[in-house]
Image (cartoon, rainbow, N blue to C red; front, side, top):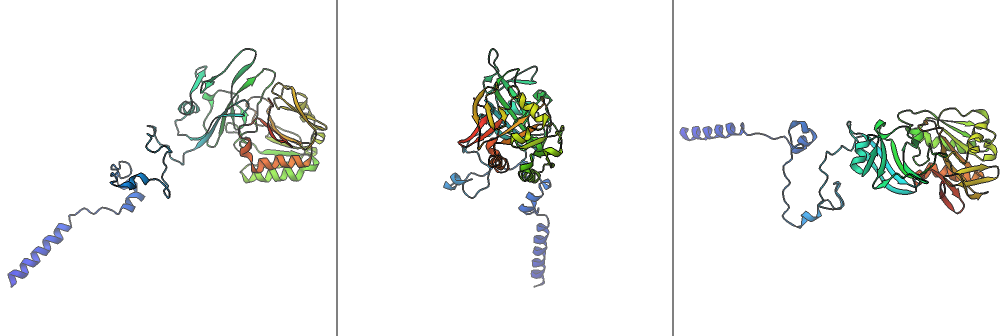
Length: 363
């Protein structure tokens, strides 16, 4: 009997001792939450083949997997940039923003440049050592009687230098547009990247925005100011009669008959054939123009325009005009900026007419 008891005790000790040497793996949830504990996420094992029809249903309804639309297509052989990386918006258009070529938000890393991002996503041709774009997706600059070229905008402001000198900044809106140009006319600012000119500024400069209105539209100006404040813009509101237009981003709201009392604004309007706005402001209406400043259409009621002007290339203090023939038309223009800004993406200017909205300059 004693021998039997000793034998049982000996067997128990062997079992316990053996278990003490078994490796105990941490629970799977701990390994996922703490990937530094092993290489589970860095070197995953190949996925097991699914032996039945359920294989075809992977990634369908109810999944959060990020799959390409073409199931089974090879993904690009490149580093995947984390979703929390900084991004820029890259828009490529033609004919003053009226023809879309490319539009995408692109994440970038520490060593990325605008040039290599464009080379990655577009077929580009460059000149002057890669500083200037001479062609995108087969559309190349032309010379002669009617010259066309690619123009570069950063947050709605025409760049004063080439893309090699551009430093990537998170949330910047970059646009290239291919259009006819002449030495007599220019577009140094555009409306199609709103509210970026006031929110991000130009190449890292970000000044407070000044909204100026005539006496009859102060409440409308305050509504637009509140909308911009909610977007993160530092903004102030002034009556035209109580302020001057300084070198800061400015939005002017009103009817031209009231705004024309300001000599600075009047001076811009007098150069309507060369300032690139696509509009000539009149006491009793608006003349809508082509890029060469030639009259295409006149309106006298129920109409407004949203256009932008810059003193020169790289002007970080553009002046926007929201000018209407009456308060109703002005309200419509301001409400479009407050609630439908995506509808003007890429545009140089916009006329809001009774028959509909028309991009400026006119063809």
